[in-house]
Amino acid sequence: MIGSSLVKTPYGRFASTTWGPSMPIRQGWLVMEAPALPAFWGTLGVSPHLASPLAIAGGVIWTIHYLNRALYFPLTMRARPDGRMAVMVAGMGSGVATVHAWLYASWLGRLAPDVTWASLATPGFVLGAVTWALGFALITSSESILRNLRPPGDTRYHIPQGGGFRWVSSPHYLGEILAWLGLMVATGAPGGLFVLCVTLGNLVPRAAATHAWYKSTFSDYPASRRALVPFVW
Ligand SMILES: NC(=O)c1ccc[n+]([C@@H]2O[C@H](COP(=O)([O-])OP(=O)(O)OC[C@H]3O[C@@H](n4cnc5c(N)ncnc54)[C@H](OP(=O)(O)O)[C@@H]3O)[C@@H](O)[C@H]2O)c1
Image: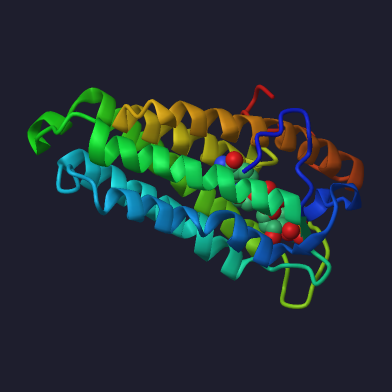
């Protein structure tokens, strides 16, 4: 996705006509994210360390994450008929997602030390993998709550309840940040810092904008709910 610090990337509730032509949002997500899967496996699949434990563990985690982001999320979203994404966002996002996939695959399959299964069980790997798992659980549970807010045919926005929404307005964004932080720590991938920075640049301003939007749209919005970090912000 575009690293858009201070800009609300124009899709969904923040869609805008000032970013040029747009496309249906479901197709936009597929165009933006799906190319990362062949980019990742096209790189890792021909790498010398393909069978190394780090490549297997990191490859499985990355692929689970991306199957949700690139396929399950867009194919199951309750898209509004007029839901749009700017073509520029989809195109630039696709480029960034492909670079991201190539960086992780190159590290896992070629550049990282070829460790044994036993030496993989370091505190760093375990801490990182647990952080990714917690983040991923937060993403999928929050996306499920959002998906089920709209009965078929409904196009309105509602106040999400339960799960991570008890504490923050965008728990799926918090989960995304935790997940990429976790994978970076687990694999030691230098390119993971690029992925984390892009994620923060996208999601911190969007979380702020989303929180402000909820508060101005719903007079009964829970006052104790924060934007992104429970009890803090
Ligand atoms: N790594 C990155 O850089 C990055 C960047 C962006 C997103 N992501 C991830 O991609 C996922 C989707 O992000 P997003 O920005 O599209 O999330 P979002 O704005 O919360 O929208 C997710 C889906 O839920 C619907 N929705 C949201 N709030 C709703 C409400 N109050 N009532 C009814 N439906 C609601 C949206 O419909 P509408 O489309 O109609 O609004 C959309 O279908 C998230 O998990 C996020 O973490 C990652």
